[in-house]
Amino acid sequence: MDNLPLLTIGVTLLTCALAVFGVHVYASGKEQQQLLVDRMSQTGQTEINGRRRRFASLDRRLRETTFGKRIEHKIAATGLDLTVGEYVVYVVAGLLGLYFVVGAIFAPFFGVLAALIGVWGGNAFLNWQRVKRTEAFINQLPELTRVLANATHAGLAMRTALAMAAEELENPAGEELRQVADQLAVGHSLDDALGELANRLPSRELVVLVTTLVLSSRAGGQVVSSLRNLTETLEERKETRREVTTMLSQVKVTALAVPLLGLGFMLMINATTPDALQKMTGSFVGQVGTVVAFALYAAGYLLIRRLSRVQV
Image (cartoon, one colour):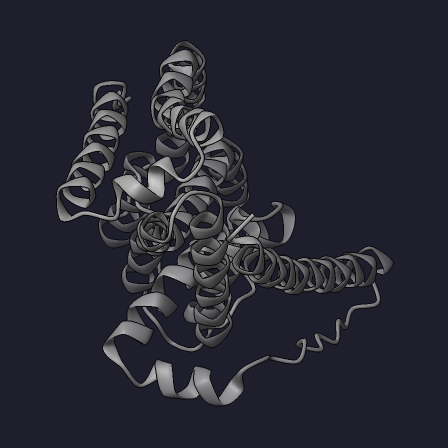
């Protein structure tokens, strides 16, 4: 096999990147486990020892740029224990691994395309984590409104009710509400703290909850009855969203199967006729045709996902 050295280098880089990511996930899990043990022990004090940050100099330089600030904001919305420098290094290592592996299996031109797709994939991963965290938070909203309603019915102020909910609820709601409680403790207004929460986790349900709490704090009124009515509404929306997700699961699998079929066809062609893909991409016409084909597959994927998107 002529591309065996490139394949070996690519597999090695990809393995190293996965190993570093695995060690990072393991360290984060151990830290979360220790925090949970400390919380369950009810000692009253929890010493949070942050893990050692990697690539600190690169992280400082990136944070000073517009690109680094944008990435930092996205990472903060996902809840991942990552710095900007770590994220950039992991993405670059993954892109190099994709380039060498795909280029060795298919052709060097496909390695370049895979690296470009990997750049999009790195950003898509953050967006997916943000959507996943938002969905988890939405599922906790009925419980959150129930806790707030009970606390305000007992005569507690909204600031105290939010701090109590932060202690009782699991993550991500507990972590997000702790940030809100910390901002209120240092002098931020309720409008600003809840507004930042709505910006981090954008959703219709959260906007309704934030609007209800802000209007109640400004004009007064029956906040308890409003929260209890909102709890019933959120429970119904939660069930509706679950039913819609179940019905559209087959469509989402179809959207993923379309580009995978194209990849399978390329593997079959390259297996039956060695170096066919390399010869095809050796000319300008072949490269243009390959780019157009990839663009059509991407357009089909996005079109199917767009048509299957249902706003509840």
